[in-house]
Length: 309
Image (tube, rainbow, N blue to C red; front, side, top):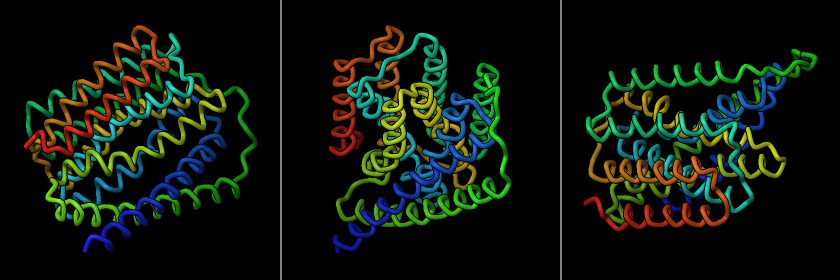
């Protein structure tokens, strides 16, 4: 029966996306009540907030022993961010600022180096998971060290308002987990029906769905001319996916990287190279946006056509 898994999948995405939107809103509200600067909000709270779907799916699928689904989702999400999301941002009028070029390059190269190690190791065990989480902490510390610009005027603190925001944030995260549970089970059922591997499903169908929060946040940020928030969210999510979330999933249950996983990693390296070329030359206009989106279409075709089989 195809209908029931499909309905559950759509319901899971509906819950996931709405809850993710609330998670991001409450994360921003909570952080601004403490006077944190915009760039730190983007790199830390918003990036982690929009990565809650990937985090939830990674944890739940790992607990269920379906590690390939979580791995494919994380790597596929990074490919989607580097190509589809940044491509759409370019079409919407995004311009790379020279002042932010070093931060962008550092994050993308950082994630690409980890991808190279993963291709070589062919497995993500507990030791590598712990190491990945340490790398995530080091990355955040480095970003915080470079961005010490804290707002000079902090808003008046209202404890009741802060507590209310925190409770809303926790409720939003709980709904995200429920949505992720529905998506994980239904995606596995659909993959079995079509004879597709869990990695391929995670890298395509799930990755598209779980990157929608980043996409929506970035479009909203561009509309408000908040380039720092858009950059911080996208780049922060890329690093969060391949360090913190992958590390947690590996600690719960070690991941063996199959052929589809290796293809996804190679695609991520290729996308990183193309993106870095455009970024280094400060060219991310509509023409480059079309190229990036076309690259993502090629990635989807390769993953779904069984090119890694």
